[in-house]
Image 1 (tube, one colour):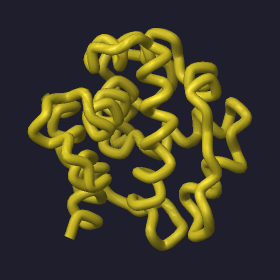
Image 2: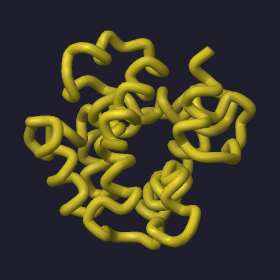
Image 3: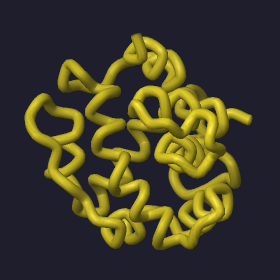
Length: 148
């Protein structure tokens, strides 16, 4: 499925050894998160409109910003140092059903999923936005462009 493809792409982008070790690596959990937000279960936020599903990263960052993580998300997209985020902040920002689905897909508890997302999301966003702004195009195309 698309989440697995995204997981493989994100895993290689993050330089992880997660491509062959199954879906539980950082790329796998981020792929599952992006897949869930892109319209897996109809979910929580308008990303299912025309074209929105092709790049749900902006929707995810908007969701985090609305949850009070504006400084962190700006630092990840910007060209300076990335500010950390905690698993508790991620768990609070994401819709409960999304976090449950991601945890189930990864075979971990929701708290472990939130912790893994908190560890890998800043680096992934930073690598996907090397110019300090959100690139255009589908998320898959953006990942492939950065994975030279």
